[in-house]
Length: 134
Length: 236
Image 1: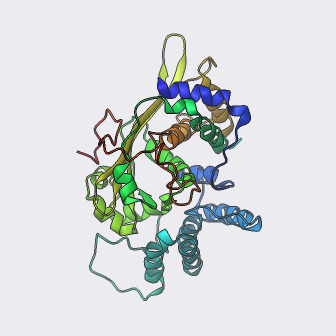
Image 2 (image 1 turned 90 degrees about the vertical axis):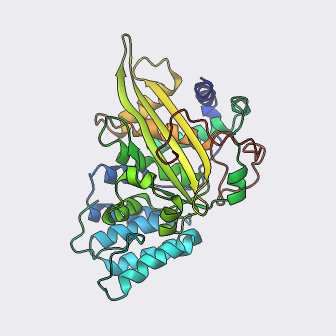
């Protein structure tokens, strides 16, 4: 009940809406949803993300958390390992919280593949060739 | 109209002073002590009868969390990697040691979500959409519960009487006509659960109000970290 009251108050204040979200997300929310519904191939997903990032960068806006990484991962799915590593690097530089994880993934992609003993505690990246789409 | 246009509106309302006079604030003492900067959202448990609810929900959670000021690990990448490592079963993940999950990503905190409701409901005079989520945030280093919230909403569809249905309907129509895509409602509920003073998450490190919202999110030491009525799989 209380929360519904708050929502009602919200609507009353809609016209004077002052607070702005921390980031400009561009088309990302829509893109993410379409990808989750399976309506975008990895290639299309990568292109959309590239566009969103380009638009944000061209207007000197901070690219929100996760976008470089999602873009890199989409590139990886299309077989572009070098492009993926570059984007993971950008994610780690933009957000130090992501750096250890991004570095680990990047290192794994660039070091020669050693067939390891399976280690369920480490998220490894597979070679992109045979990866199914998400 | 983008579904996320609704977002500033929620911020506006949640900032309203009137909203602070509801239930007593939760206890944020452990939260303040552990100061999580980054959050990894693990695969979602779906307790609704809609098969796609977990994936659809996952597409709605990273934006409000990041807008709250936290680093949020890329959700699709995380989900895909976990699935490929044999960690795709949400029930298994939710019962795995949080410290182990956090260490995979070097995350400060792990967010477990359960979709409790995701359905259309038909009552005599009206029809509507009902969504409900249970959020459980655990510390990555200690495994302790930092915050928990259970929020649900019933949106009346066509009568236009219920205030939220006015926005939700307009948005749903614009976004997608697919049956059971209730993501606009999920977006609304997420914003409410995360931003509500005294109940949601304090501002994170990327928000200018970081650590300046102690009065709204007090470290009271009362031990009430949760408003949930449902028992979470991640918190037996």
